[in-house]
Image 1 (cartoon, rainbow, N blue to C red):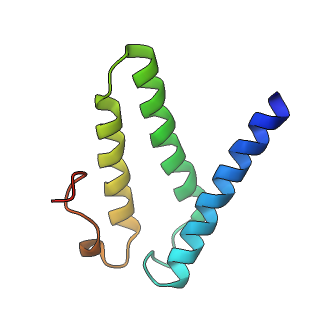
Image 2 (image 1 turned 135 degrees about the horizontal axis):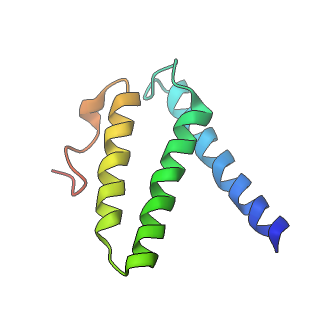
Length: 90
């Protein structure tokens, strides 16, 4: 079980890192962004939201994580205006 979960987590992190690299190649994310660090931060936000939701049986943590993710991506984007203004797209 451990090995299966570890492999799934590695696959997810690898996928995120590849997606960030592709965004760098299309000049949507700044070239100087630390790819493994950004991927780690995005995963950490999602995992914390899930943990809070499960522990406290509430869902506002997902909105907080979405806002934090959007803010982090704005900081990494070459043109932040291409991202939505808020998590609901306005």
